[in-house]
Image 1 (cartoon, rainbow, N blue to C red):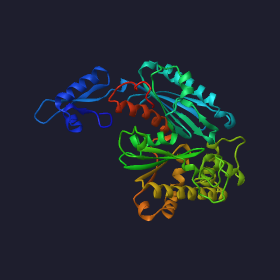
Image 2: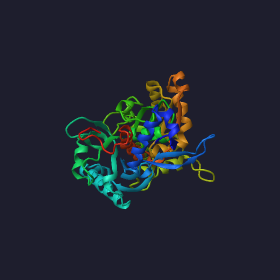
Image 3: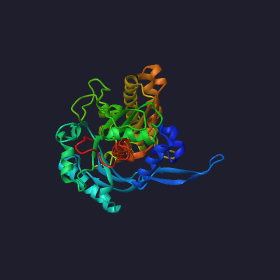
Image 4: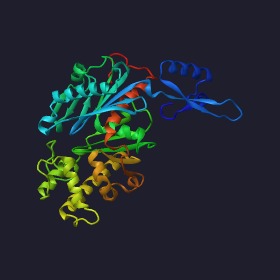
Amino acid sequence: MYFDGPLSRQELGPATGLSSGSISNVVAELAAEGLLEEAGVVDSDGGRPRTLLRVAPGGGLLIGIDIGETRVRVELFDLSLTELARTDRLLGPARHGYDVERIVNHVRIGVSDVLRDAGADPERLLGIGIGVPGIIERGGPAGATVHGPTIGWHAVPFEKLLRAVLEVPSDVPLFIDNGAKTLGQAEMWFGGGRGAGTAAIALIGSGIGASVIHGGALIEESGRGSALEWGHTTVRMRGRRCRCGSIGCLEAYAGAEALRERWCEAGGSLPEDADDETAIAALLVAAFPGPGGPPPDPLAVSLLDDTAECLGAAVGDLINLFLPERILLGGWAGLLIGPHLLPAIRRHAEQYALGHAAARTTIELGELGPDAVTVGAATLPLAAFLARGGSRRSVPGQAA
């Protein structure tokens, strides 16, 4: 009903394999709980008009959170993933921005702010999804633990810390996952990955990550998709030092932070204390000035050509390793540089990948824009809610 509705009771029979009596009983129960509602009627051939049903947007609330590189974004959604409220909490300078206590406080304030701004009852929350950089370890007594060496997080008991400060009912489940994976799930459900059996989705920001997700509308089990430290695959032997400590990583060449550093090293002009977003915009203007502007800056053009080859080679690795039907480039930096570099990235990917595998893979930009991580984070509690058949809370003690 959620993905294909509105549907009539008659249409639910073939879709579920249930008898008409069972469908009537389940529909009545879900409607009584406020989870289904009528959505109009349609004429039927020679019979009575059929009443359409849909999942009620007001049947619950979801929160999606993106622990990003420059801000913590918190968004409140209804059950249809329509945004009800949002807030951005800026992180400040990199050396202080990822302080764990500061991030936890940003999340606490952001959750309280969106609930207050929407006049929402915390008791209606079905769950809170959070996308973070790094590797997530689950199953311990502290809940989800985050290992994010590029942001200075080492075995941070993030779920335990959040539980101690969030002003929501104690049984509201928390779902913590890698931000690239939440981006991937959003694109698979609502964006460029819809209908694909397997897709690889790249998150290109100041850093770089990716996820590989194996189709299907309902993705709750971790085995159906996985986050990849794609930014730390090697694209240049004896190359630049990456912020992870290794050398030659993709992130050291194509991440926004690295692009800003490389542009400055090449003598590119930037405002003092320019952030990564400002730097990428200036680099693109220098390389692609547009009609009536100055000639393209050859240093900027060369740097972006090299970046496209690095990304193309790394995309070729994704093709060879996972044989995806689609590869989507997302993240705020990916969406900025993608329109300019996508043809070159495709060309280099074809050169570096096996021919048969490359021929069956399409490479496109993500469709959901810069909010995709928060939308994807909100799909984590939504997936659990749907998998529970509409039960509003997880079983107590169940790991999210």
